[in-house]
Length: 293
Length: 261
Image 1 (cartoon, rainbow over the protein chains, first blue to last red):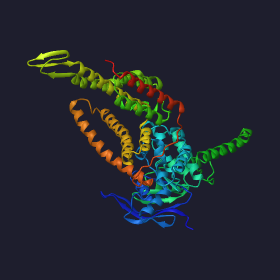
Image 2: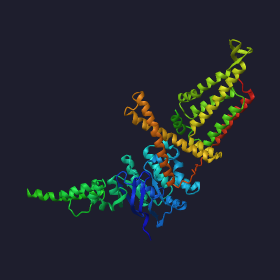
Image 3: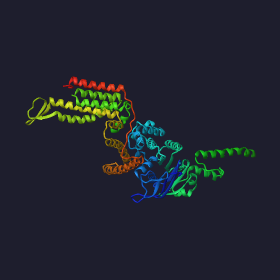
Image 4: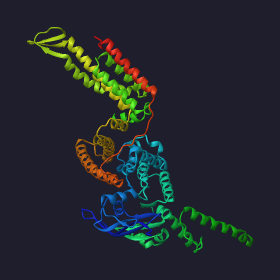
């Protein structure tokens, strides 16, 4: 069995104005993983995502979905788009209708479902994104965060296997960012493969199972978050910084407040646990020192 | 003004009433107003609709009055021209001025005609206001679909309606960005800024339509927008009320012949 659900093999794409957006890029996505794609602006993230959905066609190389090469015929495209959904960065560009319900049910109706089934799926998607009470509101009276969730619901209602999020947390307030990230965790638990592009290294570090670094249309590095962020030279080349969890950890180790052999914490909670553990072992020490006096 | 109408369409006390009922009330009343002999019927319709909009739907009466003045003032001008007639010999004129060998004045018949026209138009306008202040466009589209209006027309309505707001929003953003950098400080810079605004609006709209197409395609768009409608329950009480009100209108206008004068 092929464990890769989606692959890009050595794809080249050059825009009509001569910008080489993708240069021999190969990316293999493992089913059920949480993937983060990091890269500076203009590194080719959005272009790559449009390839994964068959909107753009590479000049060289191929896109493979579940072991089958995409041949860009109608049937093949429909199958890909049914299973790979994109949530675009700007929700305004995605919402075509003034009616939230119509926009959310657009995808399932295109799949040829009966209106009842499409309605049921849309309701479910709106429940998951917590917008069930927005059905009556027109899209132009929604806030940015609400629009974002409507655009996510519009993709969820198609029930795709893979969902691509193009900078889902850009321009969102911290609370909304947390809500969206919670949703992403839940979706992954349901078995969906998630691909997310971001500039937020902290978010990528603690969220992702696997990370791709994109630089000028090629993969500059890939690996687990710990592997990627341990390589400071690579980060510097790609214009990225270390996650703060890792920097604090390094400082603690350098200052000999933490022993060198503890594993690198993956998120804030793990780091805090380490610090608390270290503090506890210190207070343990104190009576002894006092006794010396 | 237009944004406010849209705002009220979604936020009024009748918003939860079945769209079919509101549309039926609108359609029946406007037909009665246009077909049956008028004046008193039209007056009744104007009062009826004003009552429905202000008391039932809870739209502020000041706003409604402003809305009515808009077509009202246009109608006034048009109607004055209908009322005035020119002839060689001044028979039954109520009021007339002699200009050389011509008589310019208002005859009784023309005055009646003008009043009739004025009230009939205003009645129709108030019916339309009732519909647009209580029923969101998305609901109206759903009704039109039921009435078998071609899908192409409906799709255009959906997209145009959405794009009006995106275009407005885009314009506002560019305008704000320009004026915050003194783009409109005098006539000369205003002209320059305005031309830039129009130009970038064109370019942006084009790019925007491209991204929108991509996002539609990514959701398996095959050249057709589909419409779902939620099942809503009809209220027998409301339907009865509509039949009674419109029935009363028909009976009274046929009985009185509909004329005041």
